[in-house]
Structure formats: C-alpha cells, structure tokens
Image (cartoon, rainbow, N blue to C red; front, side, top):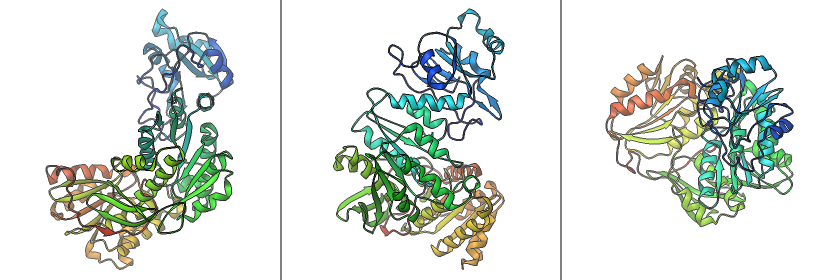
Amino acid sequence: MVAPVNPRRGVEGGEVAPGFGRGGGRGSWLTAAAVARVAGGEVVRRGAPAHGVTTDSRGECLGRLFVALRGANHDGHRFLADAAARGATGLLIDRGMDDAALAAALAPLGRVFAPFVVRVPDTGRALLDLAAEHRRRHRAKVVGITGSCGKTTTKEWLGAVLGRAMPTVRSPASFNNQIGVPLTLFAIEPETRAAVVEIGTNAPGEIGMLSAVARPDLGIVTCVAPAHLEGLGSLEGVALEKSALPAALPDEGLCLLNGDDAACRAMAERTRATVQFVGIDREADWFATDVQFHGLGTSFRLQGERPVTLPVLGTHAVYNALLVIAAASQLGVAEQDVLQALAAVPAAARRLEAKVRGGVTVYDDTYNMNPESARAALHALAGTATAGRRIAVFGAMLELGAASEALHERLGAEVARTRQDQLLCVGAGAEPIARGAVRAGMSAVAVHVFAGVGEALAHLRSAVRPGDVVLAKASRRIGLDRLVDQLLAALGVEAPAGSSAAEAPAASGGGGGADG
C-alpha cells in the first residue's frame, strides 16, 4: 500500500511525489531533534538522521524522512509501516496519532522497526517549515516562477539552460504547490548553484506562503490571465495573487516581468528588487522583433539584431525564451550558451507539441487550457502556413467560475477572427465556444459540436486529409489527449523528425502564454 499524495493538486490522491534529497546521512541536519525544533514538535523516538524527505511510501524511502500527510480522502499515517519497511530513517506524524495508535500502526514490522519518530501539530505545515530551513542552509540561487500561463515551460527551459552551466535542480513536472515546492527545495544539495522553482496557486495567499518558504533571489511572472477564477474570484484577484512573488523578492534580487501584460507591468510597484521587462516589438529590457512561425518552429531577432530559432511554435514561446535569456544572463551564463541551449529544447509534452502522421500536423496542446493560453494557441495556428485547412478542436475550460460562459463565447469569437477553417467543440461545457464563433461570423457549416471524444474522433478520421493542421486543446480533466492519441494512431506511421505539413514561414500574431 502507498500514501497517495499529489504534489500538483494537494493531498487528494493521483500522481505521487518521489522522495527528494540525498545530502544527509553523515552530517545531515535532519536529526530527530532538529526536525522537532524546526517543526514545533516533540521527539517520540530517536534514531539515525535522515538524508532526504518523501511523502510517498511506494517511492524511494531508504534513508529518508517520511512525512505522513492527511487529506480529505486519505491518510498517510496508514502507510507508516510501508515507509519503514522500505527503509525510511524517520517518520513525521501529527497529534492525531497517539502512542497507542503509533504502536499499532508499526506492529507489522515487529522488531525490525528503527526509524526516529517526531510528532507535530500539522504535518503539512511541518513540511513547509522543514523545506524553508533546508533552503536557508544552502547557498543556491533560487528562481521562483509563477504566472497564469507559461510557467512550466519557462521552468523547464531555464532549468535545462542553467543545467548546462552549473549544478541545477528544478521542479519535476508541475510540482508547484504546498507539497511540490517543498519537495523541490529538498532536492538542493551543497553543490547546487541554482534551483528553479515553479510556484502555482488555487487560492488567495498560496503564492505568498510558498514564496516565504522558497525565498527566491530572482522572480519571474510570465503573464496574468483568467485562470482559477473559482478560487481567486476575478482577473484582479489573479493579479494580486501573482504579485506576491515580486513582493517577496529581496532588495538585491531581480524581478522579470512580461512588459506586454499590463497587470504584470503594474507589479513593478510591488517589489523592492530591480525590475526588468521582456516584450515583443516594443521598448523593453529584453525584446524580440520579426517573429515568424515555420516548419522548424519559431524565429525572432533578439534585441532586434541577433537571430534566434526555437524548435517550438507560438508567440508565447518567444516570451518564455526572453524570460529564460534574462534570468540565465543574470546568473552568469553567456548569451551564446543560452541561445545554443534554447535551440535544442524539446517541446514540453502536450504543450503545443507538433506531431505529424499521414501528412497531417496535429498540435497536441491538451495539457491544460485557460482563455489566454487558448488565444495564444489560436494565433499560433493562424500564423502557420499550410496547403491544407486549419482545424481547431476545443474542449471546455474549467475553474472559470461565473465568467465561464462569457469566456467560452469570447474564445469562439476569437476562432472566427483568426479565420480558422473548422471548429470542433467536444464534450460538456464546450458548446458556448461554438455559439460565440457563429455569432462572430464563422459559417455554421464549419462549426461542429460533439457530445464526447468518440463522436469527434469519428468526424476527424473521415474529414482530415494530408496538408491539414489540427489544434487540440482543453482543460486537462476533459481528456482530449485521448482524442489526439487515437487520431494519430488512425492516421498511421509517425513522420520523420523535422517533417511537417506546415512548412512556409508566416508572420506571427497575438501574444501571451500557452501553458494553461
């Protein structure tokens, strides 16, 4: 049995966080006494120090401190014996487990049991406090990244660039919440020189709390867009929440902001750090001109002069690249080395990822979706030259609260304005996109609404032909990735690397980011 803890979404099951950190053992600060002192707890049983931290009893536990987290639908305390049997050196429990319950939980181990045990008021809070102490004890420069869109890609690219120049850690996948951020910080070792930490939010105050734990030296805000409105209430609420990262930066820090986003620009007033802006075709500290899309990806001129080509598509990729260039330069990486690394970055999985089958190019952007990332993807699709048709396949955008229907209709209008050839709306909640497109002038014949993935797939299998370009995008829980996978399987063998149905360069349009 395992303790199901999802660092992406809290403690409600799903994917689990691996164990982090190996720099303990001899000389490790993670002793029972230190853990109790930092976390405000009591030592129940002493033992050898831990040399890492985990929240997952089925992952790497050997020599680590297992933190038993509680959630509405699970309790990590049920898996103490599993963690200990897999070699955990320490166990962190809360006051809901008394000595008798602890003894009963560990009874299956018999005399094999040896980990130290510390009891704290709240294991979730203790995880944050321990991570803050671990960060304090190391000299690595910490880069905090937030934003409504683009933060995961920016984190991945910056981590890859810095990793070529210095020992670097970065958040795995989307470890950006109250579990993922601490676990990322525990990956910092004495030799680490840079840590790239993605910081997300679902509720007011979360970014401020996580920034206080990570204490970033450099902060990046990619953009502000309508996302997580159910928790944050409004676009103004989103901006206020994101601004907590700039506000947390020290006087000697650096704040990098999207200068083409008015809400981001306003955050310059919230920080004590030096501020630099990135932008496209406008005055900024770091800017791009002559943005073009083509079969190899996206090209632009850095500072209006130096040619840069990214192996991914979209204006949002240019913003991500500019932020990476600015951050890496601040951390001492030569510009030439940064650009060479960016030229080799792979597209993040299911984030406008180009896949070619049977002469059809499918842009798989099914990782997630919000209004701004959908608009950016549409503009990327519109700017892609192709001999065939451009087909947009959208599912619903979730967590938009009372504004949901209006935002979906607005997206439909954007489909019409960007002159896509066909629009497919899939599943519950996507119908307003179709309505908005027709109201904005798109032919009703070109707009299709399907109840589910199966019906949409059947239509696409019979309708697409060589030369067509298909964009598929929806919120993650809609499951549009299944449509992409099944369509690609139906279209046949994967095309050779570098081939594409969309070949000729085309001028860009739009802006923003597309991680959402």
